[in-house]
Image 1 (cartoon, one colour):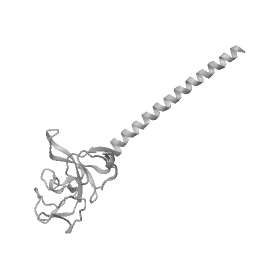
Image 2: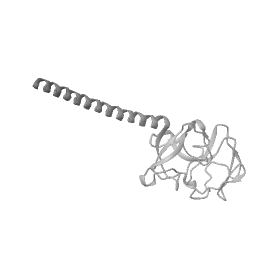
Image 3: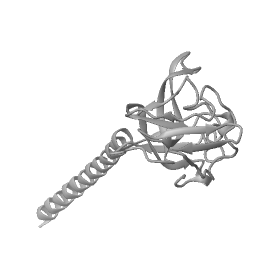
Image 4: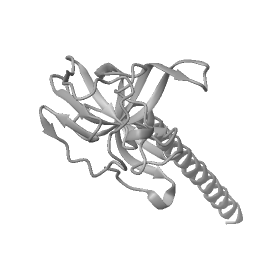
Length: 200
């Protein structure tokens, strides 16, 4: 009887031990799966981008962190996009090519005209209502004053919301953006935490 009891205790201990290892394995598998999903999301579906500079004030501030996605994305008017500007000097790398955040103003085939004396941007002959900017568009950079410029096929025209302190499609350093250089659309601001949410 005593031998049977000892045998039952041994079986019970083995079951507990096996149960512990199974639970531990399940926990490890869960953590690994979660990490894998997180990596897939942030490498394929979306990626974090840090805003560098004040060219998008008042909409975005320096050091804001954005979540950007390029899944089946085609640029649309007023989208906030992250693009790669190959001709723009990058002080961080001491070379050319920089990731920037701007707003889509014109699409392929559109004509853009900017009256810098009045600070008004026209698209296809119509003045744009731009409540997201913090000033009129008075700085010309390299863009012709009050003359229509047609956006080539597969290109977009972008401007910063901080119009007079933004280097954008008005400048030779950036110019029209090839759609292949569009990294993605801003989906969400995640930092700072008190400004978490969708940005328009």
